[in-house]
Image (cartoon, rainbow, N blue to C red; front, side):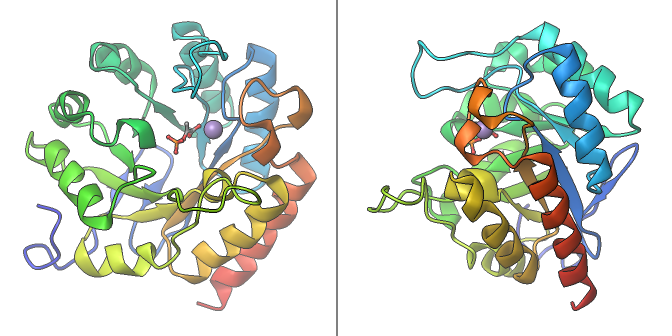
Length: 264
Ligand code: PEP
Ligand code: MN
């Protein structure tokens, strides 16, 4: 179902306030985690100011350690939805567990499948039974074919509202970057599939000062958009602080991304 051979035109995902795919460039921005009602509201305003039409924020967090902050759960979903609505934005948030699909579906416009769950086949089948758009992240050790096969688990249930996210893969050097941003995955995936392909420069590089260069590269490579993490006090962030862009850095970056898009 993913193949361009059987579906030559670009697929476009339509949400209440935005579209993803084809000629448009869609920005999704927000903190890694929903931290409080007041915080997500302030971050939504910043995200919107930078041209984001979709608010991100995790309420169920797939943390590397079980002792790290796990997210606010349904309370977080409520704050996220409210902050997005107040700014006329759509919502993207991660669903980690098959049993949470109905709950998350009540609050979000796009369900994010995290890198660690890319091959959680029961979760993929569960979101495949809904008709809610699914943003599928490439697993950190997944090949491009692994990603496309994972997308088939969603599509085979009848849900072909799929967005693919390149978020960096593990290679051997972790000293300066968290992952290795596979920018060539963008045109490769676009050649192979009709699904919109976006980039996640935040998780790809893991350090705030490397996020904008990766974002520009992804934009220039022809991605249909990006998902980026922002925070007003990254040193106090409950997750992924080191890679969060402060508001002014984010706003400068989005201006340059818009200028780059003009040249394409
Ligand atoms: C996230 O978006 O905050 C996240 C956990 O991403 P990934 O699944 O790509 O690590
Ligand atoms: Mn994160």
